[in-house]
Length: 219
Image (tube, rainbow, N blue to C red; front, side, top):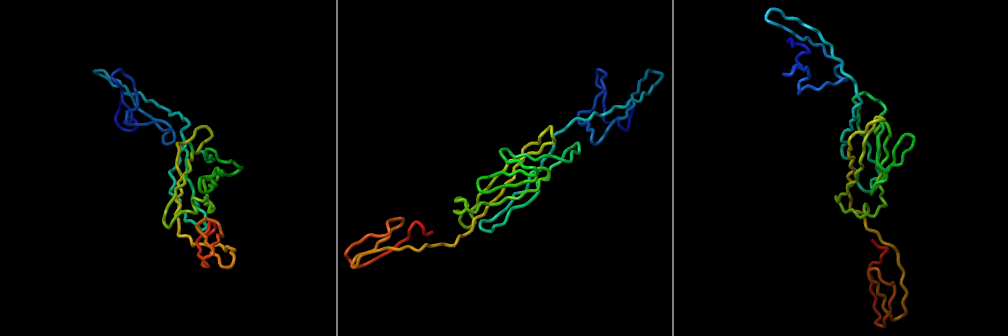
């Protein structure tokens, strides 16, 4: 091989085979062809033969970026929004996002999680997550206690799909205000009204005193 230029990317093996060096990877998207010069010589003469090598294009897997963690807090009523980034080595512009088990509409995917619902643009990757405030596990969160919701995504170019990427939503609890409901108990004159946690509203004795406690509808 002559020195310089594209020749630096190749080597001639002991059996005379011309090949790319092991530390070089041909990539159609960055270099369409190589131009090299082969030298053949004897003791008196040297002949140079130019060779052009074209790099064929193949379909490569699209790439999905690992999304940042989405953050939400209980009782704020605010959705988590963001964009999942993806690209394709061949420059395919209309990649399609996929979530196993999601409902597919014309332009978005709708995936129900354990604590809320994710909606993501089928081609754009723009998403919103709405927390289900009525979920008992969400409602039971103490101040600064956390839950994590994970959605596994991938993207397709129509033929090949990317590796999986996980979109995580971190849910932070707050200290909920206590609540109480009105209750009514009935007793006979000279009797006692006793209410225990979750118990019956009325019991009667003849002691002439009364006491009370919380029922199940008080929190």
